[in-house]
Length: 202
Image (cartoon, rainbow, N blue to C red; front, side, top):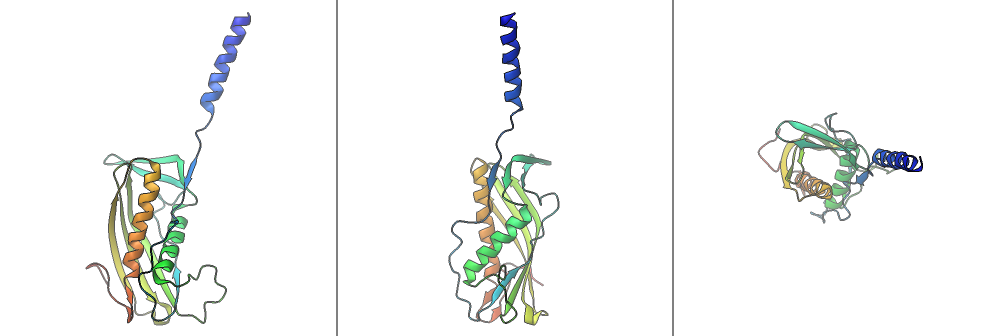
């Protein structure tokens, strides 16, 4: 009887252990060391990075990764610190502020007296192949608010190899966003807006 009791107890403990959820690991796209200054802004301005558009299927905290040629996996135990769109907006705003050495309008009480450079970014493709690569295609527009009829619309097509592991995904994403920020930052020079980093422009 006693042996039977302990047998049942061991089975119960084993079942309880199997029901314990695996821990959730959180990551951020905010780089600890944003890219160094690209050039000083000739005319002081403030940047406004509008909320980055991300397809609904990707705009969530969980990692969404590719699985083979046509599969997708939602990784509940590997998550960004907020929805992906919010992470992208915060990270790119921080990167561009560092590149241009100018403040972001986020959190500033008064921007009416300052020249405002508005950046609008739309993610068209973001594919993560774990242990392989990440591919990002984004359309983006830059323009000063006081000359709204003069805007530059460009496209960046970027990819980064990935090392093994989920931490490598976060690092690769930070790196590819730094490349995107570099593309955007390069469109502003001493004459204002210059040109797209590639042939795609309108």
